[in-house]
Length: 278
Image (cartoon, rainbow, N blue to C red; front, side):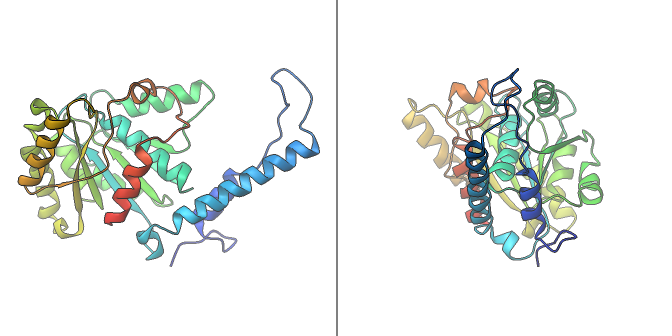
């Protein structure tokens, strides 16, 4: 059964409704003119459509329908510069914006903490990302997720690319793990050792059978067709599940850093594909 608010409303719906509360600002910046009744009606209708779309999207989530209170996704890979933090940010965005869920992003990267910087800068600019963030860059991140994330529907963990212990700790408590890489040979060499090492932590605590692990390709260049095909076959031949939804090498995803993206782009179908596997 889905958890409810004190008013008896499903928690995710209550959160979405609260987020939709309208504050009518002046029509033009620097103007004292408030929206007309017609403009206010238009805003109300727009938000009603948004809530209806989010409710319909949530109805497609099997784990939510089955009464699961929280989903944890670990994003990692022991190789820097392949778009792990960008993936984590966009995953959190999809669940918060498209599904209307309450999301926590955990930045567990002990080095760069790109996700936290991204979050901090957008907030400073006055266009904050629509989810919460915590920085837990240590090997007890799994314990913190278990102990300190009540009230969230989805927890996305950016494990960074520097610590096998952190990645393993997060994987041990997650429901799904995404190993992020590009189809380039130099970046694919570490997949087997890195992913097997992380999953060994789940095996140690007896949860290996409960975790779905996928390899996800980012920065895929459309001009390298034969190279990309060979890379996909290599992943499959190693016995790993490769998500069919991929992230192309588009400049807008690189430029999204330090902004709150309004277009979910290729990340929405990636999450939808991930959800279909659940």
